[in-house]
Image (cartoon, rainbow, N blue to C red; front, side, top):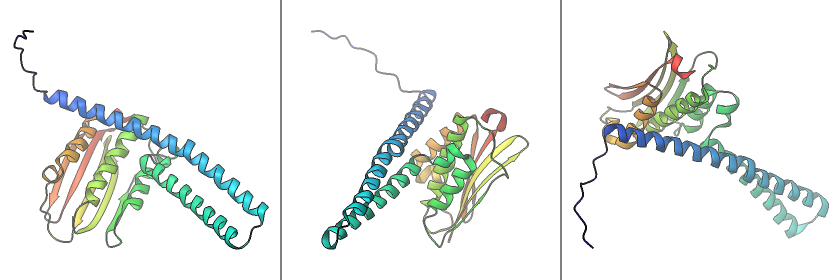
Length: 230
């Protein structure tokens, strides 16, 4: 069979790459929501049901000795399984995000994710939750989550601060960190994939991301027109 030469495949354009990143974000978010629901609604329900049956069996049997010890240990394992299921479910998508709002979920993530007792973590938010679209709430949470994750992974960390503010119809989300010593790393050099992904999340909401550096730290600043988030 004779095959005629064909033209080489064109290199993807910058627009094509941005489109792929957005599709990956959307696919990942859909997968996380589905997994969150499976953990919370299905697996969580099965574990709680089994724990209730086990508790009833313990009360009914009135066992003693080795059997009693093993039943008590099984109960303890069930409680640990329920706690683990809730933790995994919250890591995938905090229930606060859907039940209360963006600021409550970000506040939980800061307090849950602050990894070292020596690191000073702080957060600042407007006085009340804001009425934003569900897409905006999810995207802003992921932007805050990923910005904080980048900060928490920094070496010799001294402090991390999350600040969300609204001024002149512009919503600004800033994550700043300080080191014990000097700042020597540019996030685009240290973690290019994660940083470019974060930049694209911001652009997907027609926002801009700025990197502000000081001698001892860095701030990732994300700005959005509030009217586009509603």
